[in-house]
Image (cartoon, rainbow, N blue to C red; front, side, top):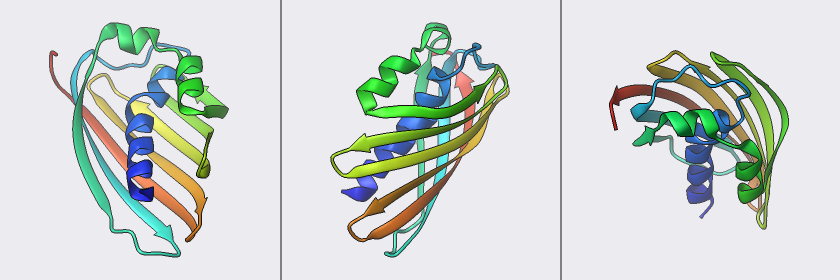
Length: 144
């Protein structure tokens, strides 16, 4: 259950939250993108390293018109800090759920047809505190 929840948060963080938080339109070309993530967990209980790849169609409208307020409210999250421009962004976010609080820190770099960054998620669980660090790389494949 915990690993599934963290996976959902990581995927949302990779694709939606960073893009939605940008004041400027990010330096990303619309199209079909492939995102690869490698997550490691440090905590009081063993969690194997997780690697995942998924694709998403990022339209020009989605890149330009994303609204962070809607995403924050739908996911129970709030940006505590964020600095964003067309080429990079850093942020700190707090997410609340019935299971507790997640603190998410991230940094992303946008290079037209490449995307790279790191997110770190910290949370307390009934089995102890954990920190999950995810390295993210994205590349534009082609048109959607």
